Amino acid sequence: MRARYGVPLKVTAGIAAVGAAGLAYAAGFEARSFRLRRVSVPVLQEGMRPLRILHVSDIHMVSGQRKKQRWLRSLAGLRPDFVVNTGDNLSDPEGVPEVLDALGPLMEFPGVYVFGSNDYYGPALRNPARYIYEKAQGRHGLNGNAPAVNVVHNPWEPMRDAFDAAGWVGLTNARGRLKIDGHEIALTGVDDPHIKRDRYAEVAGGPEPDADLSIGVVHAPYLRTLEAFTTDGYPLILGGHTHGGQLRIPFYGALVTNCDLDTARARGLSTYDAGGHTSYLHVSAGCGTNRYTPVRFACPPEATLLTLTPPR
Image (cartoon, rainbow, N blue to C red; front, top):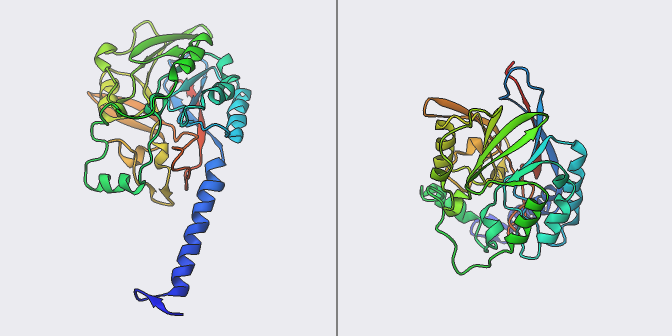
């Protein structure tokens, strides 16, 4: 067979076949291979019983995703003490009923939420390679994106109203509280830094002194938000947005985070230092994808059951 640009056609065909197989795996299998992670975090006061938080994020629901809906409903069987939803529930303006159906059993438990950019605005078709190019140029995600214009606006208000009616506490540039087993859990949240809706100055001041535990909540874990929460002394920060990199290289990890967070913290539990304090940071890899890039590789969709304990 003739060579094209010096590469034998058999080799070219083989590379194309491997690429097609990899894409089929990433879109057809791994993007629907839902997992539950279990993580312990030693942030409780001595004498408190362990608390279990179900952290869900980046659902990116598209109408018709039945398997994802069934899996999310099944998480209620974990019986968490409370639920933290760190946003990007939607990737389809028609997806609100499916989101509420999927999260319905979880809304029987106490919970809190913040929204992400895809809750407010529909996703846009974008070349995925652009994320890597912009990172290489040192330009991507340094401060977040300007507020979106000339885009589809998602119907996020009915979702907010349903969460509120279920008793979930909205943390959009706000503080809130949950009482769990007699303990006061204080939570502070900001709106999505990725589209510059965060207003930390409105909630600054640090943990509430009469609370048994204080937690910071954000959709996109931009460094300015992590700096603020950590400097103020929050022992635990929960976020999402990164999709864990979405496409990871085995034995290397994530290539991008879609914000200014370093790739080593693209998913899972880590620590963050600022202002003489150290916070635990948990970043969920999420359980969905942008509807225009419905693939995941070496990064299966997930939710996390965080077990909070006193220090050992």
